[in-house]
Length: 170
Image (cartoon, rainbow, N blue to C red; front, side, top):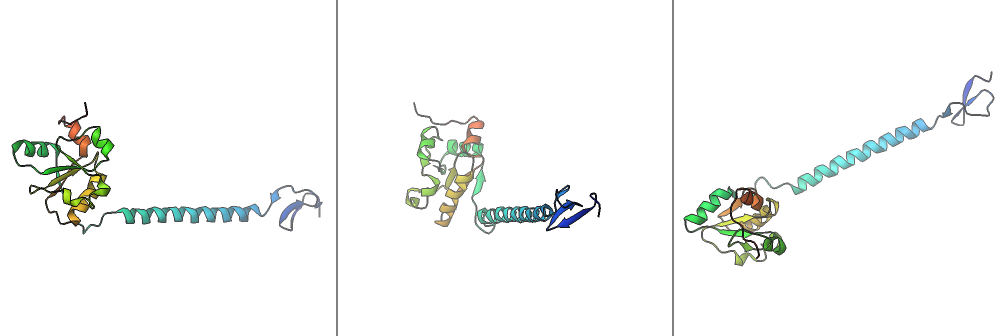
């Protein structure tokens, strides 16, 4: 065997003299394969967790959902006569910074407990800043038996973008 011949001894590639590794450890390949396998497993676990989270957070397609009403249609209904109650489900601090005139403020996570405060023969229009919290408030109203529940399309942001009046503290 000459010095230029390569052999594997104890998992290490060495030159013919057996003293100095010239190419490197043969084991890193196995380690890399194991690492790749762990990365793949980790990636699959992340994808599965995201999928499970999406399914858990998804709304039940069978569940009743409030009808939508545009900011302009709500404004016209309020101008025309008996209008639905407007329910702002944002926090009291957000409500104090500006709200639709005459809106009742009950944070979305308190709607179910304070359901007796929501009384309107003309229905209820629920809003938050852009929509997600309003959907939770609507679900509580629908679960409690309210039948005329409406979702303000785009929330307060759309109301303001339409140039409709907002009550602000002085």
